[in-house]
Image 1 (tube, rainbow, N blue to C red):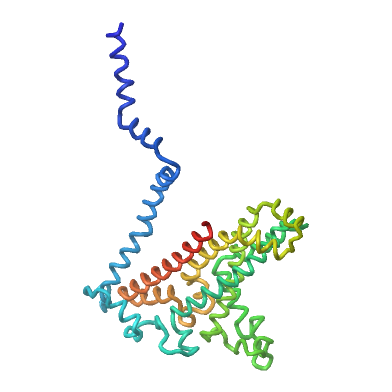
Image 2 (cartoon, rainbow, N blue to C red):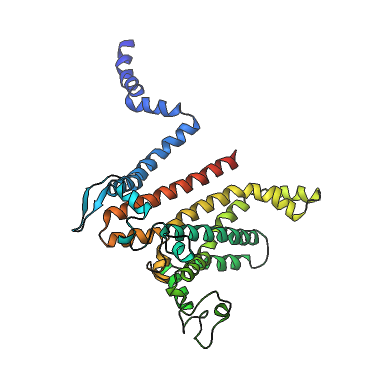
Amino acid sequence: MASEQAPRNEPRQQLNTGPLSQVTRWMENLNETQYAYLLLTPALVLLAVIALYPLLDTLRMSLFADSLVGGLGEFTGVTNYVEIITGQRTASLPSPFLPEAITVDALFNSALIVTLIFTLVSVFFETIIGFGQALVLNQDFAGRRWVRVAIIIPWAVPIVIQGMIFFLLFTPGIGLFIGAENNPTLLQQWGIFGQTPLANTTESTLIVIVADIWKTTAFMALLILAGLQSVDRNLYDVARVAGASKWQMFKRITLPVVLPSVLVAMLFRTIQAMRVYGVIEVVAGCNTVPSLSCLVITTFNQNLFGSSAAIAFTTAAIIGIMTGVYIIGYAREEV
């Protein structure tokens, strides 16, 4: 009997000691963190293929000179970066990368400065206004659903439609905010806008910022609202019993809990704002409002592939640095 059972048990023993069984036991011995990273591995590999490879190829292209006949020229190392940053390449670029002087006109002609101004101003006001909208939506009142829909509608508007709305609003003789020469609007009387704001770099930059705030504030409000709804309501009841004011409850309860959500929302918006292109092209055009993305596309269209790649990789590096700052701040809040 023992001799007959031995052959029957051999396949089961081989199954328990086979490669699949070993992999299964190895996975069972992983802790939660290791198992989470294991599940993320396919996504990380896919991200490396989709994002990392184009970035590395952009770096490779940036190390070659521009060619007058198309394609890439000879290998020049970091010459493109040096000449773009020092201004030696400005004459061949559609707009300067860095300002050529410390004046208002020179600052708003610089692609880097315009992008930073757009990012800082738009993200700041979107966060403040979005936070206020989230606080309103977090309250229980009649018609809250309709208020939420009204806030979300601008976010659902396509970029092309958004750009055309603000283009028409500030077109002389057509727009609501720009009147005829003999009938100026209040914005013109106050000196905020001239007769042709869409042809002025400074005024067009302001219009683009307002257009972005109008559309993207809802995105910030929804992300912050998700953080507000994670706050334990019992904490407010305890604070009221203790005699805390609304400001004290906001400062001691609401803000500490929702701050990580605010940082995540600001991170997403900063990355998007640093890559702004569509709304600029529709409202005023890249020739009027230069940005880093505009500079990359216009140089690429002029067959300046080496310069375009250098500006693109520099933009990615700046975004990476800003992302690192947010991640460090988020990690400190979590601790």
